[in-house]
Each structure stands twice: as C-alpha cells, then as structure tokens.
Amino acid sequence: MELGFRLLLVLAIGVLLACGGGIAPASAAGGRWELLQDSVGVSAMHMQLLHNDRVILFDRTNFGPSNLTFPPGHPCRRNPRDQWFRGEADCTAHSVEYDVASNTFRALSIFTDTWCSSGYVAPDGTLVQTGGSDDGIRKVRLMPACTGGADDTACDWSEKPTDPDVLAADRWYATNQKLPDGSAIIVGGRGQPNYEFYPKADPASGTTLPLQFLSGDNSMYLYPFVHLNVDGNLFIFENNRAILFDYKSGSVVRTYPTLGDGAPRNNPTAGSSVLLPLKPNATEAEVLVCGGAPASSISAVNDNRQFPPALRTCGRIKITDPEPAAAWVLEDMPSPRVMGDMILLPNGEVLIINGATDGIAGWDSANTFNPTPVVYRPDRPLGDRFEAQAPAAGTPRPRMYHASAVLLRDGRVLLGGSNPHERYVFGNAKFPTELSLEAFSPDYLDASNDDRRPSIVNPSLTGAPVSVKYDDQLVVAFRVPVRDPVVSVTMVAPSFTTHSFAQNQRLLFLQAQLVTKAPQLPGIGGAILPTDVHVASVTMPTKVLAPPGYYLLFVVNGRIPSKGIWVHIQ
Ligand SMILES: *[C@@H]1O[C@H](CO)[C@@H](O)[C@H](O)[C@H]1NC(C)=O
Ligand SMILES: *[C@@H]1O[C@H](CO)[C@@H](O)[C@H](O)[C@H]1NC(C)=O
Image (cartoon, rainbow, N blue to C red; front, side, top):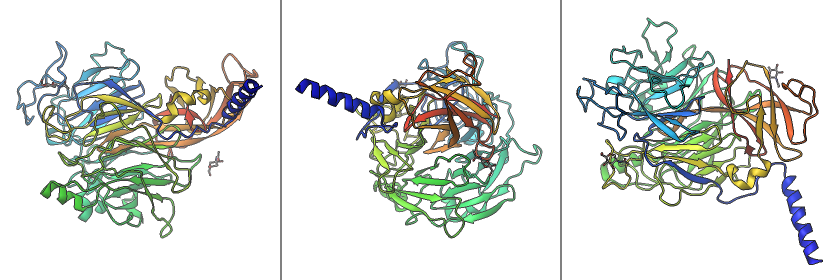
C-alpha cells in the first residue's frame, strides 16, 4: 500500500515535470565549469567565433614572445617597426585558431600590432579586424573561416609586411558595429572623437566624420558601447551618458539622461552592455549596462594603490522611447563587478561573467576576482531578474583585465585570456597571465534539463550553414521529448569580444508558427510527424534588425535551448 502510494507520487511528479511547459526547476547554483586547454600559448584579449565553429583569438604583438612557437617550417615574423624585436625574428604566434569540436588549436600569423583593437564579421563570414596600436594602428587584417580540416596551414590572416594603412585615423580602443548594408562603422578610439566606415564608400576619400559626443569629459573613456537600434540609428554610450546617432546625416537624434548617479561605465571603469533581445518584428528596443567603477577609483588605483569596490548597479533603458520618456531604471546585481563580460544566451537571457569586484581595468588595477557568474532574465519582474550560477571552483582562473568571452554553438560560453601585466608574467604574480581556455555551461545545460531539450533535425542536422533570405519563411523541424513544448526561435549574431564589450552582439526572437505537418520537408512531405517531432515556420527578419552575415539559430523550449545551427542571411 505504502509502496503503491510512493510509486503514484513519483509518477505524479514525473508528469508534473514533463508537463512543466519547459520551465526549468529553480536551481540556486546551476552551471558548470570546464577547463578545455591549460595553455594555448596566447592570451585571448580578443575572440570571435566563426561559422566553421572555430574561434579566432589574438593578443598583441609588441610585447615580446608569446608561449606558442610556430611549427617547423612556419615563417617567423621580422618587423623592423616592432618595439620589442626591432627586426629580429619573432618565431612565436600572437593569434590562435581554436577548433571547438576537436578541442585543438593551431598558431596563426599576425604581422603588426593588434593591441586593443576592434572587429566584425563581414557578410561573407570573414573576420575583419581593424586597428590596434603602434605599427598596426591604421591596419585592417582579414581572417577567413577556414575549411581545410586539421591540415589548414595555408589558411591564415592576410596581412603582408607591405600592406598599406587602410584606416583614415588611429583606431586604438575603438568599437565596431556592423550596419544593414554589411559594412562596419568604426567609432572612436583614443583621442579620436570621430568615426569612419570599412569598407569605405569612397576608397580614395580617407576622411573621418566628427562625433562631438566622444570629446570633452567623455574622451577619458574608451571602447564606447555601440548598438544598432531597430530604427537604423546607433545607440552610443560613453562614460555615463548616451545618444541616439544618425550616422548617415551625422546628427544626434536623441540625448538620453545620465545613467544613475553618474558613475562612469566604459574603459577604464569598465562596465559592459548589451542590446536586450529583440521581439519578433521589433519596433522597441532596450539596452542594459551593468557594472563599472566610481570615477574616484581611477585615482585611488593609480595614485594610492587602493582598490575601492566596483559598481553593483545595472541601468536599463528603452532606447526607442522619445525624450523625455526614455529613462534609466536601476537594478542591483548580486555582487559588484568591473570588467565583466555580458553575453546573450540562446534563450534570450544574459550571462554576466568574468571581472573583478574592485579596482578598474588596467595593468595591476584590480585586487579581487569575481568568481560567480550571474544570469539576468530580462522578462522577469524588476527585483527578481538575477540568478547566481555556480562559482568557479577547484583552481579558479581569474579572468579580469584583457579577458574575453564568446557564445559557442552548443550553448556553452568560451572564456579566455586575462593578463593584467604589460608582458606575459607567470611567477610572482597574484594574477598570472592566463593562457588557458575554459567553457562555462549555464544551468540550461544541466542534465536535469535534458528531458525538455529540443534538437534541430532540419534544415541542418549537423549545424552546418543554411542560406536564407530576408523575410523568408524557414521551415525548422526539431525533436523535443515533451508533448506541448513552449517554443521560441532565436537568432544570435556572434560577438567580437574584447575589453568587456561584445561588439556586434545581438539576439532576435523570430516570428515562429508551429505546424503539425511538414509539407516542405524533404523525404517526409505532407507526413503527420511522430509526436516528438515538431515543425515551426519561422519568419526571417529584415536587414535593419539583422545585418547580413552568419547567425546562430536556436529552438528554445521554455528557457532550454537546442544546439544552434548556422544560418547565412543575405
Ligand atoms: C611560458 O613560457 C615561459 C618561458 O619559456 C615559461 O617559463 C612558462 O612556463 C610558460 N608558461 C606556460 C603556461 O606555458
Ligand atoms: C512586421 O511588420 C511589417 C511592417 O510593419 C508588417 O508588414 C508585417 O506584417 C509584420 N509581420 C509580422 C509577422 O508581424
């Protein structure tokens, strides 16, 4: 009798879970850390995932050898303008291609200095890296998505010793944003209150256009947060304030109020920022800015070697609201954070990871690592949006200055870098140079969620790229082991991440209609599908919402995402 009752109870709970409509069980500290590589030999100051599921990472070149020696036969770098080698051979790599599936990496060649640079992925899937420092400050370098498997040695950065300067101004600490026409705007940089485009509309012009907003007090802050708004204008945040900017006419459309108490949020008081996920056919957009440091921390660190607490606040604003309605709403994170990375997750939540609880960005400028990532759930009520994840355990790898993070196709977040030193320093340092790569799996990847996890079976079983056109209907078939999944379909632009800001990152919820038959699926035309197979007809977005190029597309059940597939939208 008692046994029977217990069995009934277990069955009832099973049914409750299965019918939960995809709402994950509340877990106080889900998520998992995984060391992928103890050393790839290069510190990941900048990272970008390409549509071959390989991550291109790179550091700078002007500080001496890295810890990755070129394989025999690989030409060494001889750059007379290199500050360290001065024309002597540098036979070490400063960039690496990391293959996610095989967990392997290989050395790549960069000729001139890429320190604190910017980038974006062109519509054809090529990584376009812009600027840097010293001899690289006006260079543009290209890295394709290589297809040659393990023996891909001929596939590398295209940068020749004789390459001319391409940029019209020095771009050190600038931010790029891909535009609806597939080009990029390059905004700011140290001492550069202006912008330019790549490729140039008129290659001969060589001009920059003024951006007064980046001058005055704001010129103390670097790497502006730039987001492409749904109306085609750019939201640009620097220091503690923001504008909506029409880059075509060079005019300020809107001036937003100052965020909170006016504490600064950009490098070196490095907070981070995301454009929150866009709803289908979005006409509204919101921006979230989290963390940073009080302005007084700059002199406290630089003059007195003190490390005051970082900011705990985030500001959220509806950027499509006209003046004066647009207002920042403040929220408190569970812990203070400077130099955090904000990464949009496939389910529309935001992971806040990496960084310190005190100090500022810079060499030896922070004293306490923040080991605990936090997930922000934008659709929950104010005051109930943050959910702490499992802290880095075992031997944590503090990732602070010059660390980075990018989303992977399988829903994990790749973490690399951290080097709060001018050169590579391993012994006698509280925070040694990090050459490792780690993956953080947010709690949606916990095994307890496997019973509600979708998997895409069509149009791409392997994740390999599928071509789509703007406004197309894409038929997506997926399996999910629950009867009534709560389905949404999302599309994510992978970011170029450096210095606590994920450039070009955006996530769209797409219009998706569930259908019971699959008329357009090859092989099962018109068939009634097995009960665990579902089909969604997904409306592709417009160019302004999703500039052309490669995106990751996910099916999400509740808050549990599938693995992504690549879509190439043009
Ligand atoms: C990097 O290279 C230095 C110098 O050769 C060596 O002392 C150090 O152990 C290396 N560190 C790692 C993490 O490979
Ligand atoms: C999206 O917006 C456009 C323009 O307002 C409209 O024509 C279209 O029907 C909308 N589509 C959906 C799916 O709402």
